[in-house]
Length: 169
Image (cartoon, rainbow, N blue to C red):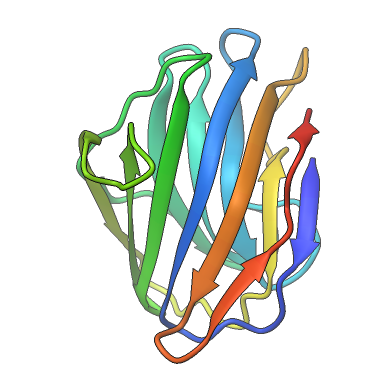
């Protein structure tokens, strides 16, 4: 599990980062990324927005939780493959909606699958941590090995480019 305090985020922002899954066990779900309001494991008692990967199918699921309820309604679908380099764009439209797209190229012109959009019934706010890896009620068994690099977050007026590189498990 990797975690980075990125500072208080506004209710709307766009994040870009590079992603590569190096290896993984079959079966468990794990957190590709999450933005949360505290440093605890995503999908527990915190507010958060996150993308899960089903390591059996490599399908991505965009989810959220408001500290009390987990929300799982989405449209669109994305399936990845181990060993490929991807470029992720995550958009937080409001406290109740968000979306993500994944691309094969750094210019973000060749999209993988379709954009995933999701809403939730609660208000999710106070986000300030970027996390990857473990999630509450998800992972077990052997660790996933992946690389995340070039994390950039923009709220429309300020862009924060953060050093968040290296391999994690």
